Length: 192
Image (tube, rainbow, N blue to C red):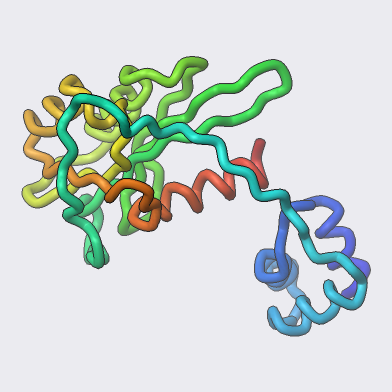
């Protein structure tokens, strides 16, 4: 099993002990996360990732901010809470920006758009894709940070026109958009 574990870590350098455990279990190994963690510690195979933060949110703008409608809420069905966020992706020759909208219930990306510029049309493109793929039902809340791209009138008026409640995190609070941040982390560490 150690050889399979080492090969898996070589193939997937960003995996921690729990992801390694799930991958080994998918390959037919009968192991639990405690044993995998112990072996990874003994063999010095634990993942040590650099933590860095790039700011993609500009919350100093003249547009209105909206109250947080999703704090402490857990969606019981799809299309109850949509979470919107932006991130950057470093490619070999340039940076690109990715705007996504996730359904908080299924943690599924329902709208996305990529651009070399971080502007309102980027966030609006992800919103339009989400609206095209999902039916808007009464009570749907759209949650984002207080960034200028989500506060601009073009974006908020589009949400109001389709009957979506607008919700924004408090300044400096990323907990309510954690599902999107988790998606970005997986995307950057495993796919890009």
